[in-house]
Length: 319
Image 1 (cartoon, rainbow, N blue to C red):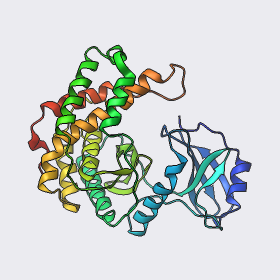
Image 2 (cartoon, rainbow, N blue to C red):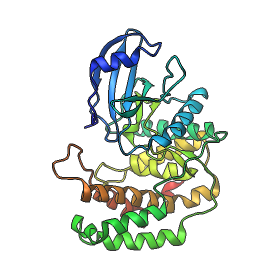
Image 3 (spheres, rainbow, N blue to C red):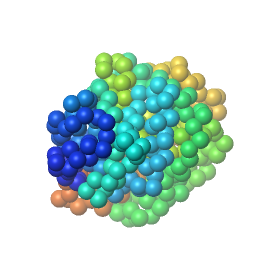
């Protein structure tokens, strides 16, 4: 469910009147996604996405996100910049929500990624990181190690209500990461949420990287670690696909080779990425009402990933 705020066709037509994008032909709510309200808007000239930013996106962060997208688009990256109206404004207010009209990108998200698609995504992430070397914008990551401690504390003893032993696992992993999290690796703006549903493809070609609303400034290689956990396992986290892993990392290395110190840190970064999603999913699991329209995502899928990374041979991260 991804339409939390209803917007009438008449309201969308009035909004389009302030742009040079043609007149409204159709508008339809988009079911994918969980963070914002999205409408596919077709005009007499083109297609666009109208996004209304709901409570999880801080309006104060929107200038950073939009500056990031503009920077990447100017460098030929397959990202969807926000369209400016005739007065030059990208951010509007629609039904009391901050909103943007965003360029439409063709393609579909892979439901069952192939090695070729993983390689293309790794290369696209590497190209993205290259394009960000001269980006000066800064946004702190609000989901770092101290935040994981806070989430674990908020979940408290209820973690074991999700699965026996989960609380002890989280405490043990936090202690490990406190002692081993790298402090001196290269940092840059990162996507921080590059799951398959945030990549659009036509065949084996990446046509779009979307949903930058967790983008922030953090360890660059951590972005690859997040992507590795998102792409190289079955949805339930039970099955690791070594071929997808090798293809993803080779693709990334072909575009933006890891430094030796980044490669050495990948096992720890991957454990941190798995714990980050375990904890955010656990918090949502415990705090989302059973009758809510949003489907809760199973935190145990990332417990399985975490347990894999804890036992994995570091060689899996070598091309």
